[in-house]
Image (cartoon, rainbow, N blue to C red):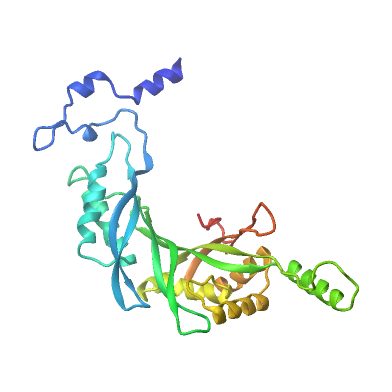
Length: 324
């Protein structure tokens, strides 16, 4: 019974609904600004899936392009408050997006605006926690491996900035990088069979065996250093680094010569999910742009009904565990 009564203390009663004491300038009930007796703080509260077109500068194109984004916008709710002004989260983003290109300076300025403008009263302290995240698909021109063709390669991306303690700011960039992985074991057994068939030791089949390979994905999340942010490190830069670790990136447009080149490239880079993880580890750990990083790797198996998967990270105390 006591727990039930405690829950009722955080509920809304009929009298509050009908006779809200706080009004906005137009005279409408401003229920959000009512004080709360429960003294419960909420670390992050706000909106997600707020759709907004945002403009990004594309280094590989040297131009600005607009992208359909989904925004996640959170702030902290202090003790003694009923709620936050959620529409203001969206309105401030809308206003800032009309005049700016999105990068980490954009998110920093947005967070500063939220700290100040989402206070209910001018004499309140600034907000202590703000979380801003944009999810979007980012296209890059990708040249074909051999022929003089190109296509659009799309990357699922997230841009994320978090302020805690009223001043500590961290910036994260997440990219889903898709590549092809040829199973080394399958490749070895295929070549073993072909040699045995040529020698007449095996009569089964026609002398040709195909190693199983599959489209694979590395969901990579990095925490950028202050220097990387100052130097404008962005999506194209992270993609180029992942291409070094995993050179068998999937292709957007291929002719026959490109397809053959891709087959040769896969033969040069056979890898289990474990190999892919270690390659990523060595490459990311060699970079000074990252304070921390984590990668979720998945090989969408063509042999099995299940997938091979791994999670690897920099491994610092209190750091990132997973990329999602």
